[in-house]
Image (tube, rainbow, N blue to C red):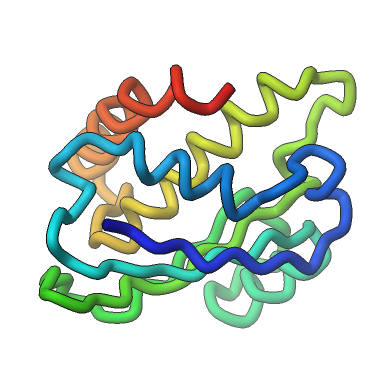
Length: 153
């Protein structure tokens, strides 16, 4: 089972989600069995942020002076899921995902779900530095999203 501790530093998230923790809990519950880690306590932290703050983190940790949609900080380089495993931290920018402003709630939820899955896979050691790694990660993202998409409405 995956436990997501959700923190928010951007009030705009509450306009879209009444209970952010329940939304992300629902996503994790819908993950394919391979990523549910049955009989194990797997946890991660999620910070719901904005462009200003994610830009600072991106500059500090990646030396990129621009906002981004998601940042992931794995707790360990080598992931070994044991009885009690902390995966790391994910930060998602509200401003980055809330474009265009005219998008409906359904589309926003889809984008948030996809980017959360992307960040989650980074915590598990996936990356997209090389082309072959990009396609491997994309396959896993799509695999997970297919399981989750009907449950996020």
